[in-house]
Length: 129
Image (tube, rainbow, N blue to C red; front, top):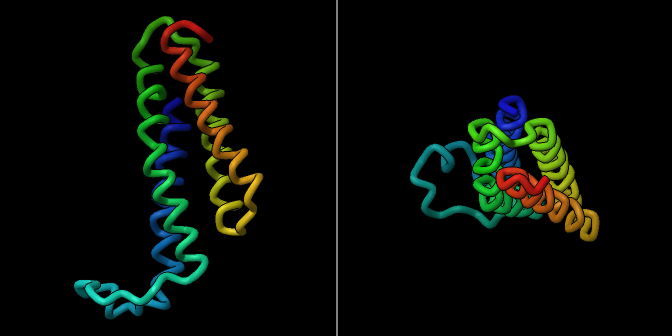
């Protein structure tokens, strides 16, 4: 489980730096290192990367809480909890790719697959898995 928690956190960091890497050429290194008061408008891909990052930030607690609790609660089926974490991770990777490429339906399906994995992980905490 720790591997998948780390993988999701690495994905989170990668998304932070991806968003910045896409935006920095428009912003300029001097502005980026300064107060960043008068920022240029985000381009198409920088905006998408930023929105995908915001979405991951909103969903991260719903992944981390059951993932960490599955390591501490004795009767949790850890194999199933790991599977839920893996599904969440791969759904989020696919979601990011689809968001950047503007693939609407698949992106939404992947979002809900990630949510379903988290719901299942919560159910495992209460012995319903």
